[in-house]
Amino acid sequence: MKKFEYKMITVSREHMKKDSFQTEMLDKFNELGNEGWEIISAEGLNGSSILWKVAETTELIFIFKREK
Image (tube, rainbow, N blue to C red; front, side):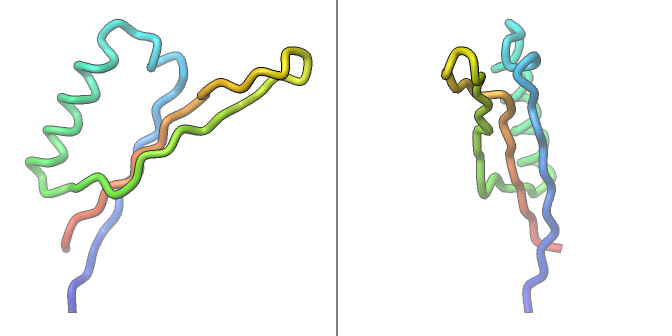
């Protein structure tokens, strides 16, 4: 019977605005891939303002799994 372990990474809106965001994330994903982790889900969490009625992504959540 296969057993898995899971890891979750949350990225804030402030981090997404950094110029180096994409490079940092690709480096992290490659590092985790080399350790056997596989992305199984990626979701953006949205927040909205009552005054402006505008939704924007406030966080990204990545879920990884690997076989134990």
